[in-house]
Length: 97
Image (tube, rainbow, N blue to C red; front, side, top):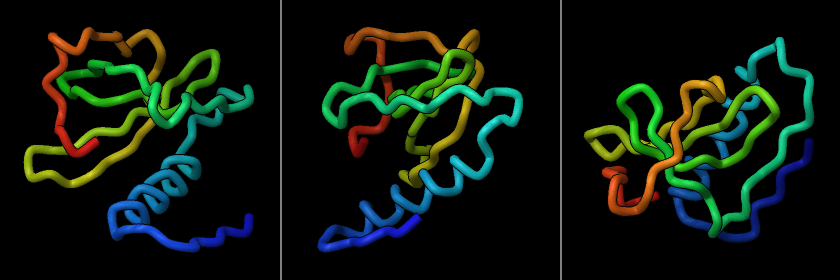
């Protein structure tokens, strides 16, 4: 995979690296194609105590992004049965997403 960065902030680079790392750790029991949500249409979700946004999905898993309490960006896969969509009023995630 060739990656070309024309411009962007350090946060953009951090997110790109997090996505590549998440793709490497994708559950091997799910060979389905990964579908991305639109950049400005990411669902708000709650997963095991974490409020985040769904970035991509397969039939069985969802790729979630979130900020921890220190503001550090994370991305990881979660089983679809553990992902709950929430309304904007319910969501308590980091404003930097």
